[in-house]
Length: 326
Length: 286
Image 1 (tube, rainbow over the protein chains, first blue to last red):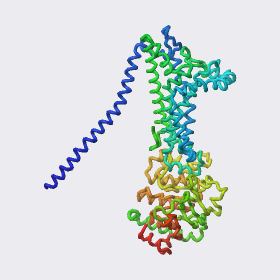
Image 2 (image 1 turned 90 degrees about the vertical axis):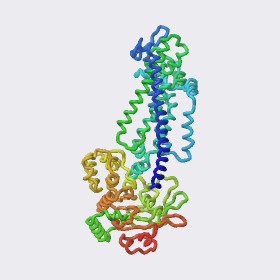
Image 3 (image 1 turned 30 degrees about the vertical axis):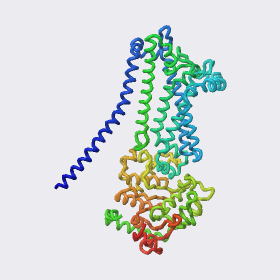
Image 4 (image 1 turned 180 degrees about the vertical axis):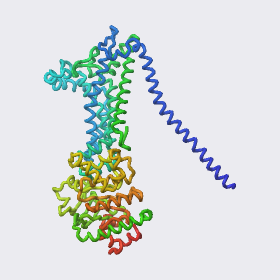
């Protein structure tokens, strides 16, 4: 009996010692996780509050109006919303397939000796500061694109499709911005694709091989469907970066704020570039408030697109238990 | 291993014995389907298999047994060249199906795999419906006719002894099935294109005893039409289902896999010629 009591107290001692540790650990992780929610709430509150003046004056209708002219007090934000969406979509459409194929090559087809150097270069692409991309875009890519792609395109296809037509003057345009953004988000999409494809279990590949599939079929029908959710997640990260990219976009997009360009080959504006370019000149409260409103809109666009992506993953990748999610 | 015996009903045991007996009667008329001659296999400089020779007979179940690391799986996977994409892996010698060397220079591994079905150690269905899983091999072969596919899927699921359990939910995900059911769906997938040979790499090692018996029933069913080669850790299983047995061991010095003895299962288990076989069978090592 005395031994029993002693043993019991030992156990109680251990229990007391460990039980608090777990609660403590749980509390720390919980508070860190809640901090993220808190941050989003604070940022949301600040931009909601700061944009009150603009919201009351113009409301959501400002998002669908042309003509941005702070001096006259006109704040039509449609060109910025349009430019943001269009340049990001161009970027995603170019970098998406490209990045996934890079990921496929790196994991499935690449010879061992090439893997590390190639991965290194992909990651190097991510390490270049956006202002460098902007400079390169302005001085090298935009003139090249204007002379060898934009002008011939506007003179041929552009005669039929106004979206690719118009008068190409400066090299700066939404199209060039989209392409530069594509290069900038490419490493994100490629690296995430590579990582999610690398963890597709080998038994899925073997099952496909064993029914007599070619390498292409193994990748297309077994590997990519399994990694689909993760790949979409990677694309969304890339898209988020494209939507918010400021410096490179500001340098290349052309700063056409007053109207929605008819052609992708004409200058435009994105929301982020608009905010950055006008902030030094925003001297009255309305102008300032309008810029904060634009930040709120950008926030909203990102949120909505991410929501759509979530739903896409949810509905398209319903079946696969154990497939990779990002 | 005792567990499995305990779960087997006397009726099922009798039936197995009956099947086996029929097997040995038929055995006389069965010709060689798959010939392995002086086959060695290397991973880089490491010799994984040394000079293996055996003849696998048509529409028989041949079991490959032996302790872990003796090269059983390597040998099995050499038969449909699953090692082709492994860097540094290569085979030497001959493996021939109906006299045609599958390691010849002009042999196409993809065509080869279409003639050979394979079932893996872990059930590995695709994240698709049961129906689509079984239809996959057919679609890879270019089948388009829906009715023909549906018919073949049903036939394959019946052969794999799983039809009655899944016929009402062919459209639901194969991942929702139990491990044993998944494995039989994988068997159905392997046999749907009607391959000439079915390879099974420890198909029951991840399954419980009851599921194991069901998969064994499926194997005996397959034996009517297919040549089956099975790698197994489980000697009772080899005894229950196989007609011929190959016993392999790892060379203690070089760690290369060797074929110790090959012959009719009855002989291997009751009257082994090699002392090492007898030691292994009687559980003295391995």
